[in-house]
Figure: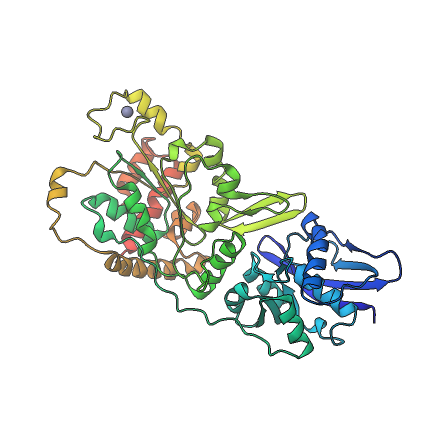
Length: 483
Ligand SMILES: [Zn+2]
């Protein structure tokens, strides 16, 4: 037999499709051609695969090798096809028992010495494989625990090409992934460390309860970053489904911890203000990778010194925040990543950011206004809570033996408030007040008039826009239902 077939996966964003790898050996000038919309990294794998086969003590067929990757319409990129290509060539040259290669799906990059290296995006790839009824999967040893997260998959691991070949020949016993360590709860900063800032604490709790975006303004040292860092600690842990979604994004961006790969806590991302648009919303080529906003999916995206971010970069967040997902178009295809995160913006009162508070700063009110205006109206339209924090007073600092509430107590209240909101909003397919559209708030929910009296007055006098009024309604819902 000089024709063999095996399987791998092509990923476009987080969704993928099973790729059939066909290998044909024929008489002709020795060489290897790959057809089927493969990018340069795959065409380069010729040399890698050949070296890996020879260095594993196996034979490289001295014939014309044609490899077809199908469906040809699915863009294929990266080095994750190496293992499937090598197994296909070995099967076509009858170095493997007939049909052995066809039973499995292979994901892994090969080193020149024949080692099987881990690849990014194994979790979404295995999910795609299982959806297409390919549940027998072979991956590199380091990807084993991650692949294992897909309960329906039957995962085998190999550290070298030789060991995978030995397994397929039946000479070696198949290896299973190493047991996943019980996730050690990473130390999350606790609210008990925050001195004073009653308004900031309350704003953080309301933001957590309603899933509202939050702007914190105040002098340096007021504790804006401290508060933002503590938001993931008071959010409910991720559900099983959310944990898989979040882990899949981090798998693609290569930021998963080894050993215990499943992410259970809401993630926290805090890009620096020099961040570019691709690093924030996603980008790169040939297929776009997720940006900070997607790595913060189901968690928190914190932008410290938000007015210092480039205007275009901040504005690029608007659409993704609105849609909960980001679509990145490239010549090779369109990648879609989820980005349902909570945005926390922090801003100093002025560009010189005096450490001593307002009084000693020489900035005029015009200069301060101009600095605040760097945050565009359309972005702030999506930020329900906007809170100004005072500098921490000497008294608050010295009275630090006053009892302070820790994150666990606040998290309990947040959990109850979220459950209450979810049961009220479920009829409209929503779970969080922060996601509720204006029409739903105004026409369906029938909030008590007394709670809205001052907002209605402000609307009448032109002090609040309609969007501003909707923001008040959203926060009102959270406060009213917060038990
Ligand atoms: Zn100033």
